[in-house]
Length: 427
Ligand code: SF4
Ligand code: SF4
Image (tube, rainbow, N blue to C red; front, side, top):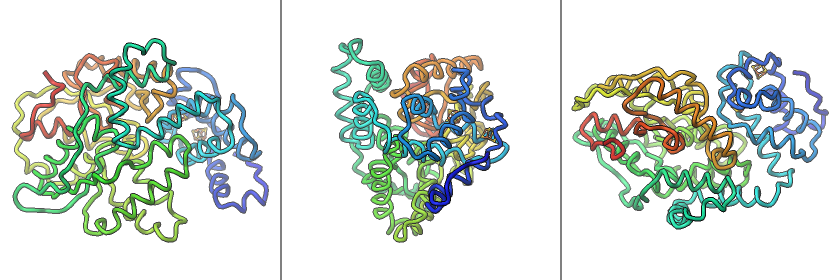
């Protein structure tokens, strides 16, 4: 793609990098075929190629983007399906991230939009505020029909979660028997409040495999929420605070485990985001290199040492989150583990398409997200599974709105099959 940045603009290392990304695009349009919003809307500007043109134009002109441009860029899920398809290796993730930060700085959103985005950035990354929001949401349900669609969507999602988990107090969970290594687990800002059973299942599995698990309970959030809302300043502050907190422990760890693929993707990008930071670039690179999704990590271990106590042989449809398959390129490991632990797995059609969760997308774009959620649930149901597994809490809560079958995290099924409790969602 021909770009027209001035020599002065190219003197800015950020724009120089963006220019290089844009120049990789040969506008073939292959990416449109796998873009969920292009497939739904059929509008070039709601596909990756059109969005790349919008971004190029906006960044070359360095002017405040208008409502139409922001509408099409806001509709992007950041699912990165286009990245998996692109034959030219266009780094769309860092391009749209830059675009979102630019919009946040230069576009004056309408007040309701500003308030909603501000509320999401204020509540979700903070476990105490999120706990408070879940309590409040149960009282607000009778009023739901008087609220705007975005808040109705937020209440619907909150309803998928009938209980609020207690704060985690334990810091270290020691290996069963001989210790083979040490790992740290990020409990996740929303996950430790809404679904701490996923963390407990992860800890039990890792302990059974011989790993001491250090729970990073004082780390509220990985910064993905603020980052994807374009709030770069608060996101970078949070990342830096995390890295300073982890700096002493990190060298002694075998891995930094994430059991929410959205968080894992964010942490694997710390090295890129802090590459210019003299103080923290080294530790950011170490953190990114050591970050492993729980299934990615378990699949690298000798998991056959675990006794498979499972006798059910249920059929499981595995929903591979976009952040897992398109961003982290993890495809086979969760399936291999499920099969090794006694489950039959099905092949979900159109597995590359997003379920519509996409961080806060199902709150900010409720209509598009509902459409994608229904389509994903139908694709999964067509394989006639007994259970659905996923590797990201956001996808789990999104799909619970549209699916009949119980949906749990993959590690809950692996834990159950190797001696842990049956997940409460499974009757
Ligand atoms: S597939 Fe890649 S090169 Fe082709 S239009 Fe899309 S982003 Fe550009
Ligand atoms: S990230 Fe997803 S929604 Fe956005 S342009 Fe790429 S494929 Fe489309």
